[in-house]
Length: 172
Image (cartoon, rainbow, N blue to C red):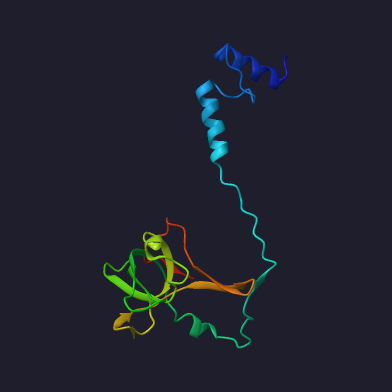
């Protein structure tokens, strides 16, 4: 009886006499090339250095569960995003919140994002805050972001979810 590795090698050689795959499992040269391309395309995990990051201290006061549970966190899809005229910071988001009606939320994140880069993204919003007028536009909710300082400079990341999560999905 031949070792399994030898059997695979012979089988691959029979399938293509002039082709030899290094792993001895590919049935053809095309399959081998496809497997090699898939390996090359695999994302390389970025090593992140958090040694120069400062975060705000945690709140010492507790929020009771009943109060917290009144906040309605939802997945929202960005349908449109544009700069608010006469504002350096505000972006106007038109969002699909799953209700069938578009929701408008203003967010002061223009210093961190260009509006067109956010169209199509899935984000997190608190949808049951009272409407708040800003720059003559009523903002109906709040988008969630993570902020920190890196090397003394403020950084902001809009929380973005997997695009497979539907608009209106409740977050707990």
